[in-house]
Amino acid sequence: QITLKESGPTLVKPTQTLTLTCTFSGFSLTTSGVGVGWIRQPPGKALEWLALIYWDDDKRYSPSLKSRLTITKDTSKNQVVLTVTNMDPVDTATYYCAHTERFRESFDYWGQGTLVTVSS
Amino acid sequence: QSVLTQPPSASGTPGQRVTISCSGSSSNIGSNYVYWYQQLPGTAPKLLIYRSNQRPSGVPDRFSGSKSGTSASLAISGLRSEDEADYYCAAWDDSLSGPVFGGGTNLTVL
View 1 (cartoon, each protein chain N blue to C red):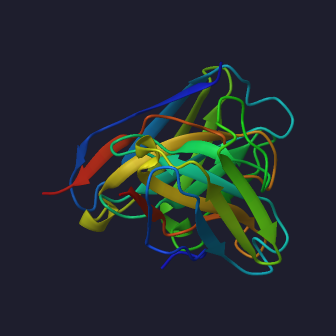
View 2: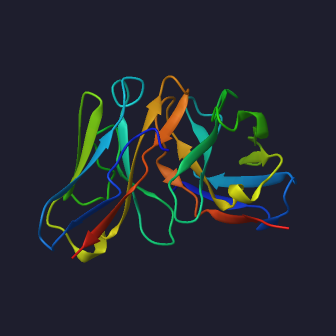
View 3: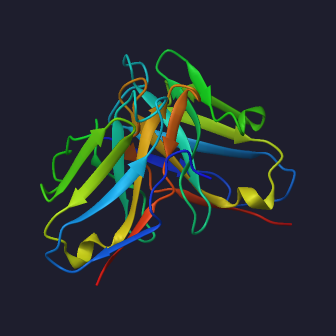
């Protein structure tokens, strides 16, 4: 079965770079159409899509955050990494990674999420 | 400000049928599938409806989705206390080249 799990720091300081890792199982990121994305949710607020990477290394970013985001994959380790530069307290959120099986479709399987707090 | 528009709250009594709306535009709902997620407090979103009206295995048939033009709806029939949760719609947006979400609807079972 498909599972995903996020890992990374729970606390970062303002201006620092956040690096999150999504480790998955039950599928391969070499399979045609498959993608892994990142979505965040500030406390008490709505879901916000951040970035998405597909099997063929096609990368998509939220236009509003594109300059701060980088998404990469390591198919040998079954991992997807998201970096977010210049973190700010408004970036405090639960960060989720999720699986999609086709281009231009939303996510079907989600990780449990990891809460990242930005504070000095 | 979310790209897709949902009512912030909805409510119903046990056994009732409730619907939650999701409004978008020609670049998202109007030309792509709609997805619905249920998020119980403190948990990750769970897929309820995919490709506008399909249910994943394990999702009760009390949940149904529909789409017309640039709007979509999630209907929950035979409302139960365990349906109390936040519900989000999502769709691919051709202009943004990525998925977009609604602002979420908090469902209360009275």
